Image (cartoon, rainbow, N blue to C red; front, top):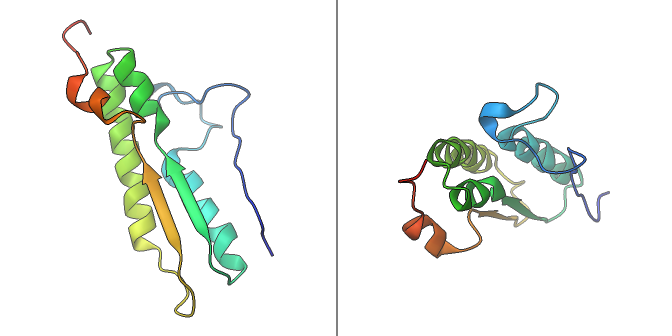
Length: 112
């Protein structure tokens, strides 16, 4: 039975989707594995998946990086919406994009 799970897949920062090494999992695979581990317990659970590289790419004015990461995040969202919790439990899954909503609206990609 699982109390807490944390996935650490790189010594430092994970790589952007376009530069990801083959041994580094994508957000969808990490999300799928987390759901698999948590649902094995048969208990209610809380899962938070964060697409933090979206925000990092935006702050770096990397339009291509931000869009690639948004696609990754969309895949993770689809993974969560396709997975169903056991009928006798309530599961909460939170997916988080950029930490600052303004960065999405105000990101300046004109210098990329």
